[in-house]
Image (cartoon, rainbow, N blue to C red; front, top):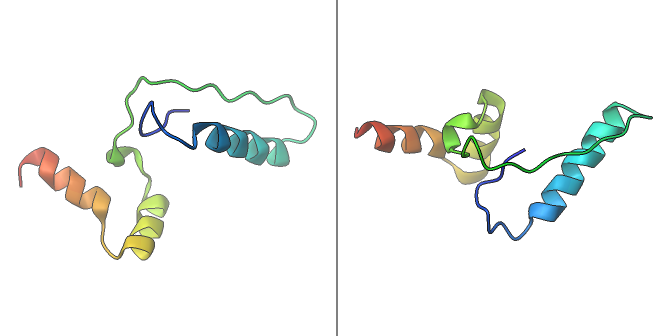
Length: 73
């Protein structure tokens, strides 16, 4: 798993939540989520469902806007 920033103040909480969610779906299995920094996280890694949820929260498609800036639109 990767995060948006190496200095993320909630990194430990996010890792614990990810492990708990996986353990809930795979009871009895040992789960260990590893934190990695490659590949570097960018907004284009957000799937369609995530984009829709973020758009509901923020009122615009920030992933689409980020992609436009990357292309120079």
